[in-house]
Amino acid sequence: MKEFGELESAIMSALWSARRPLVVREVRELMTYDRDVAYTTVMTVANILYHKGLLRREKAGRAWQYWPHETRDEHTARLMREVLSGSEDPGAALLRFIERFTDEEVGRLGEMLHKVRAQRSVA
Image 1 (cartoon, rainbow, N blue to C red):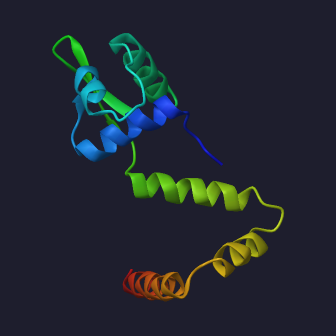
Image 2 (image 1 turned 90 degrees about the vertical axis):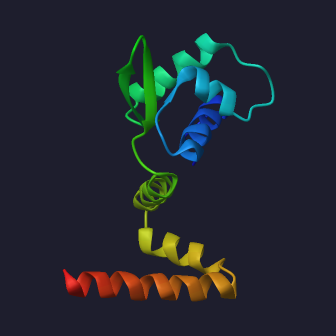
Image 3 (image 1 turned 180 degrees about the vertical axis):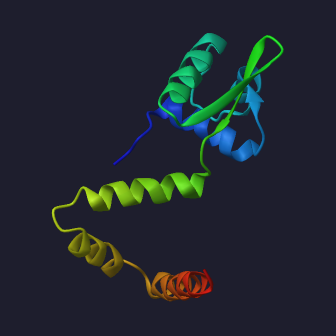
C-alpha cells in the first residue's frame, strides 16, 4: 500500500528531513525529484497534503510554513496498522510478515517487544 505519489513523496521526504517548518520555496529547494517542478505545483500539492491531514501549516508573512503532522516513523507505523487491519485475518498477515524477517530483524523485534512490555508495566 503506497499512500503517496512521486511528487507527494518528494515533498514529504523534504519536510521530514528538514525537521522544521518550511515555506514552499524551501521545500522545492530541498526536494529530490527527477525533474524541475514549478513553485506553484509544489504549493498546490502541499495544500492537498494539508487538506488530507498529512501536513500542518501556519502563516509566515505572506507564505505558508508547512511541517508533517506525524514523523516518518509514526506515518509508517500507521500505514502498517491500516494494512494489517484491512486483512481478513490480521494475525495471519502479521505472522506471514514476521516470517520474512532476517534473524537480525527477529532479534530487534524481540528487543522492541521487551521495551513495549516494560513501558506498559510502568504506566
